[in-house]
Length: 111
Image (cartoon, rainbow, N blue to C red):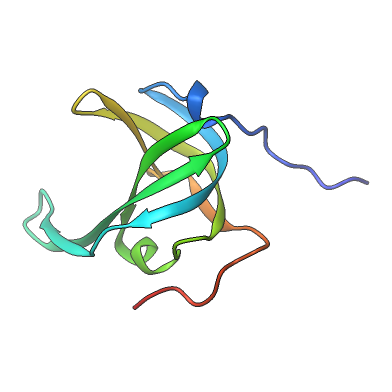
């Protein structure tokens, strides 16, 4: 039986308040920072840029995700949550999504 793959969406097709599956390359990584959660506990967060043939979008990485990718990695976000931040779409894994590294990984993730 052939391998099943979730349908992929291009970055240019992403719209806020929707769930999407995309494949893209990590083109930039910002520094990791700590933010206070609603409960008052700190949580690690990092912004990244994803790029495909149709455009770019911000990716927000939380918790253990911040160390899971490096610049140049090809990744798939399955059922990621697209939101609006200051008038621009951004994507995160959200509560039910999943981040996968694809073939062609550039090397170990930065620490």
